[in-house]
Length: 243
Image (cartoon, rainbow, N blue to C red; front, side, top):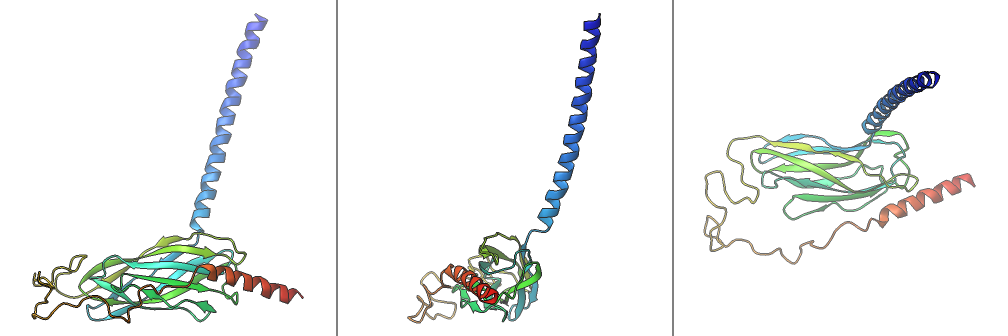
């Protein structure tokens, strides 16, 4: 009887220990989930602001990094318009704080622009928020709404480590009357095609051929080695200051 009572007692103790362990695991899981949610909310994010324009006008939008916990040595990114028949990228520029930049490379159809810059003077310090990366001018072409998305190709912190920001696309609204063309720009508002099957336009003139000899095809931003150069300059500057 003593053995049987002890066995029942051990079983009860085991059940109590198991219940306590499960409760502790549940509590740890809740704490971990809360910590994860906090970390995600603090993740650096590239935000493209919204813009509104008329079919024959332009609008300016910002490309902003919400926060830079470890600073920003340099970046390399691409912006893309969902449908260049509604709106197209017309120009882009950088803030003066970036000492080394590449010429914005805009595709011929205005669908994509590539941007690259380095913070050689250490203007974007660790903990900085709402960091403007670039300003982009978008031209309206036809009524409609299109997204302006961003793709981070390379981002480096002040210590040379790489990080990948989250992204938030902007919306370009082109206001006005008429029907927006399809993504390939085949149909005008009156339903007529922009060019005939024989390669002539609506006025009977010959459609334009290939780009002329002055085309900038092949010209793009310089290599992402720019970012490594910027980091080396920052390190050298720090060493000189210590001496």
